[in-house]
Length: 168
Image (tube, rainbow, N blue to C red; front, side, top):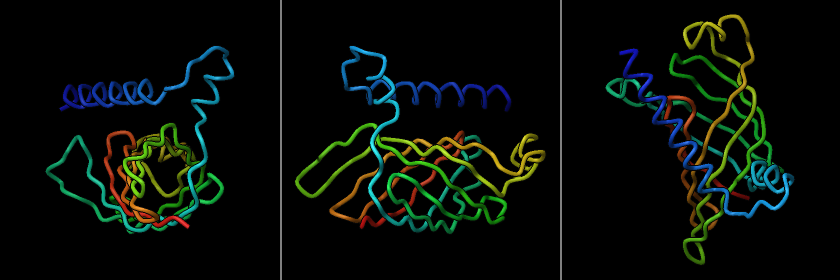
């Protein structure tokens, strides 16, 4: 099992690196260009509702309903959700897009990230979570929307999630 988990982590890291390479469409003539590309552009204002997650290391557990409710405003987000242990969690941070891909006049696709702080996990998640109440969190996101309504896929560590959003 431990060997399988390491292999899965390698695949996720490879996917992440590939995504970063694909997202780096700019030519980097100066180091500041690299930092601007990594930072991305602020995500549009909106509300995220509903989220379902599965752990990639144990897909047979099925989906968890996370009851997510969050708001994104000015490129920053704040929200609450139920984790897989059904404990209430809170998250805050920034949400940025590296790549905006228009698929048609009314359909848009985005690839980016959320970087922030997460409160509400304990030692069941990890030894560090048992000692530190607030954890750093990096989440890679891919979204697609029709006008102001859309769906989002999120990858956080070894957890894949999906949910809905409304832009305003």
